[in-house]
Length: 167
Image 1 (cartoon, rainbow, N blue to C red):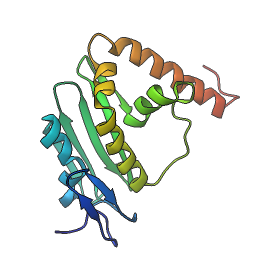
Image 2: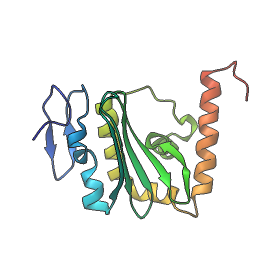
Image 3: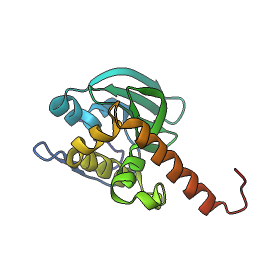
Image 4: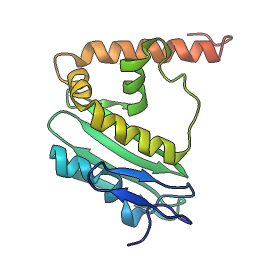
């Protein structure tokens, strides 16, 4: 098996789905290892894939489950997991914003930029630990309130970072 990340080793525990690795780049060929637990444990299905090897190996995988859609993206060396409610497929947010909304609602998107390795392990850990909370925020009934809080929090953080901006 080719390691998920270039130039490193990976130790994976199938029971806990944890990965310990050093960061260099994510292999498209092993993309399913990034989100296999969502397919196995939560019934998600891959509904779309896009791979652009000429663009630094960029790829996007859309996973669709009953509660919401997830986009695993690797774009020019930056890895992220994004989420979209089935009730508003045009709005996509970084899953880290949902985590901020749950644990630090006054500081949505205020955290420091982390490495791809930290983002991957942190995001997958959050998905496993707080899956039911995420479902509750993204369901049709609660999503309008979730969207409003996310947009307000992101706007607030933007103006804190850019005090001279108008809006």
